[in-house]
Image 1 (cartoon, helix red, strand yellow):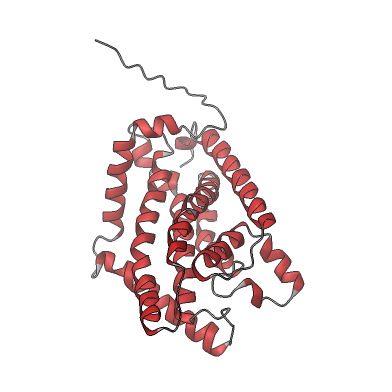
Image 2 (cartoon, one colour; image 1 turned 90 degrees about the vertical axis):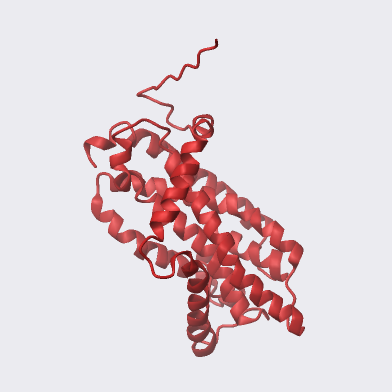
Length: 280
């Protein structure tokens, strides 16, 4: 009979995704994901239906404020379709960042009872957010189908599959930002209060409710291009709508920044996990 040996090191490598350990605990990841998803919509009137209602409400609000009042163009894309697409991809990232920012503080009771790869929980947040994103695609697809049947506008249906390739990219960025913030909130609790505000400011610094081409100020456009999410959102629109200001340089820059943020997050996460129970 073969023996299975697991060695738990109190001083793990500073930069280690522990993917092998996470895969070994994939049943735990799946179980936690289901529990987290169920808990998230527990004691709500409509439950997961909010995943269908929220995108429509947000899209209609953006249409009214940015489309009708501010008069911001959408590069010829129907406004409702434009806002549904941008809001969906942003919600995926924001959900990972927000949940990941409280990884240590929200799960201290679990971390203190049993050992498992600490990154299992942030990974489960990515899976949950991906599932929510796929559900939130339903209003977007119904809207796209309506415009296609009426002949008003046709999205690139093949681009829909290509756009799904952006999820791991955004997931890696969200994971890095989330666990980086989570590592800091173990010591500075008040930073957690700024997460939702910071995510909202980040959204407005990203061409989610406006296309990059509508930013006429060269100084502002320069800074918006430095936002690593800008390339992802514009590439998403290029895949689905055939328009979007994105270049190979922007894509390469975004990938490099994503890798750096993920590395910094993992470094900080692996350093904090050894002693965070003393401070949480």
